[in-house]
Image 1 (cartoon, rainbow over the protein chains, first blue to last red):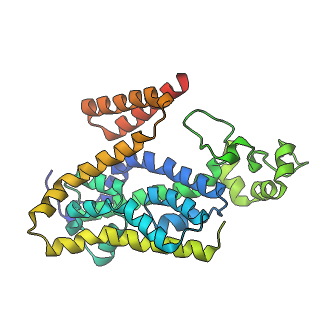
Image 2: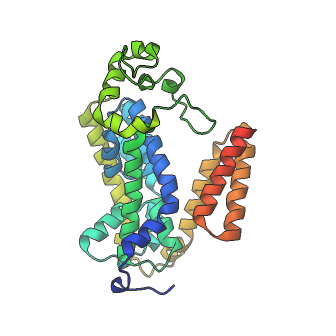
Image 3: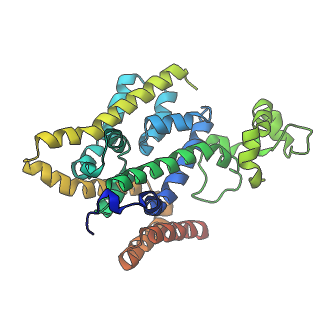
Length: 218
Length: 104
């Protein structure tokens, strides 16, 4: 494939959407899994985008939850990060950053140089700079969106199928919000659940964003 | 959950180290462009890292799920060698794995 210039690539964003469809199918569910784990671990849901914007390295984010819950010293956090993400050093050696124009775009491209971004750029040697950045932005969008929607998908743990649900201790009990609403209302399905976690259940079921995001699953 | 200031400090630490690791090769490249070892690493290590990631993924597969994992892997590899379509390989391979896991 010939290396085309920026002017020859007016559909960079649309092409990037097509390029990332395959990895998006992996990134989004992983993001969802991350969001579920984060919420189950006791973090508020909005930590998911904060994690994903500050770290943006999937495997490390999963590790981070455990590290933070154990109150790991920051020096150990730094060492763990170094060991887990050391592989990224090798990606930069052949990543076509010289094709990305502009300081801000270059900085973002380095920041968002994940396994997926490298793999996509390596598999398509002719990508223009603009398309590379668009590919990275799409990948991060899938991941962040997955993390945010994780709390919606956290609910149906009872619909288990092997290899699908996380094996958190919370799942084996009962999800507070599987009940669907406060006790005594038409939305309450399992009073046992609500009795166990009344505050949690009631609050989640009554949040506008919860109904808006998850009502179609009922 | 832990104090939010501690979590934020931890996140910023991870941010800084990750960014340093991702930016390091571009700084190094300017100085060591002539290095043969660097060119060798640039050409071979990405594939090497992918191999490590694959082995790392398969390492923890329990014995009971080895069959489905092998079936999924075979479907993914076979389809990819045949059609060279990443999307098809990923979706079909995952489907085969899920089917095998739930039917056995």
